[in-house]
Length: 144
Image (cartoon, rainbow, N blue to C red):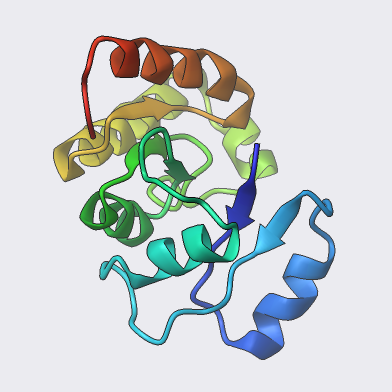
């Protein structure tokens, strides 16, 4: 499955970060127009030689990038607990009480759904089930 990594960081910062990605994840060419414009998503799809939008999914915890994906016509999956809305490192997240985690998770989830994303998960480990759900929605004729 073709994958791209999108970021708005300056090239001097983004390039070293992208260098540690697995080879099957392509660092997208930076768009000249900032998020939430759809340009970065479309550029990434062109870089991956994607011929049609149907079935293309953007996964992010960054609200502005998710809005960009929505503007580009993509399925969008928001990351609640590991995204920027919670703003915590994994160690900081684990240091919270269960009640504090649930509060932050619920707040981030509501904000993501309020943005209009199609699904919300806590972390990438839950992505498989979410992608299966999107596949079923496609089979039923649903579009993003």
